[in-house]
Image (cartoon, rainbow, N blue to C red):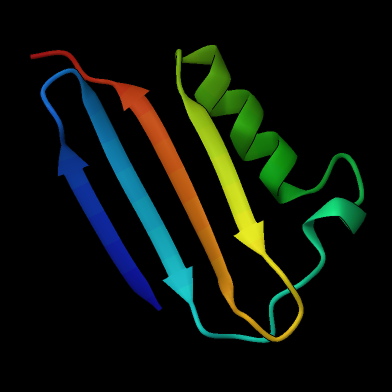
Length: 68
């Protein structure tokens, strides 16, 4: 697993990647952990993207407004 965190001036960006088994993102059931995380980030003005496919690992990209 790899974690990257970056401040790009106005937003905090994070990416978590792994080289695991991966999964079909389109087939994810509603109401699971990623939906909950997406909802929480959205409530704070952020976004979440999940990219994966069977056999390719998974990457999760988030973006949140940053305040100084």
